[in-house]
Length: 273
Image (cartoon, rainbow, N blue to C red):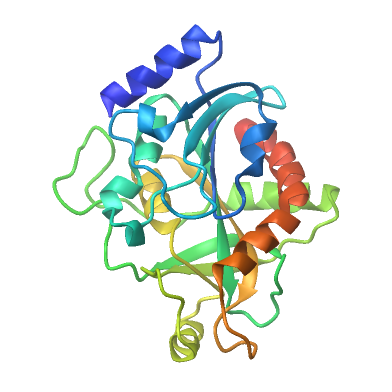
């Protein structure tokens, strides 16, 4: 990770840029925000030592560092998932490297299935809490005390302050953002209707295959996190239709401009909180 941080620092310095204060992780089909930064320094993941490659459709696989409304920002256009063969520890490599660069706040976005029947495709939902059903935790194994405690508190995995800022910011672009509980499952197969009924019973509003390891690692390192899910489809059994990844990408494309404008206004708010 030190080598990775060193490479990124060198690339930023060579471009006359600044080390990032805020990080934004973009989920499936939501990568357009990476192209909105001013003075961007673009680094493909394969050029960063140890950084896992993105193989999932809809994940560009590049780190972009630049300025968003005057705030030095790092954008991860693509993430590593467990279903790609990565461990939970590998999936949070980028978050840990960015913490080494001084990032204190992170905005995690994802494409999610709507379990809560009040959600419809295209809704943006704030993650208030999560349920980890991945069967892995990025903190398994020996603990590095320089990064965080052995048993980190997860009471506020998603910052209440950031959620309040996000709700207020959303109203400026004509959105009312509800809150919901996100459950992470391993994938890559979509859930069965019976599994969705089970997830609803245990308190989940949204379902996806990412985000939770990053939230855990961020909490471990003392970072504050905001989570945003783009509901790209009804979960299995909610409506009488089959699921496919093309629909996920299409809804992400449809919500592109709205999400870009929301993030553009959110980054300064998060940075100043």
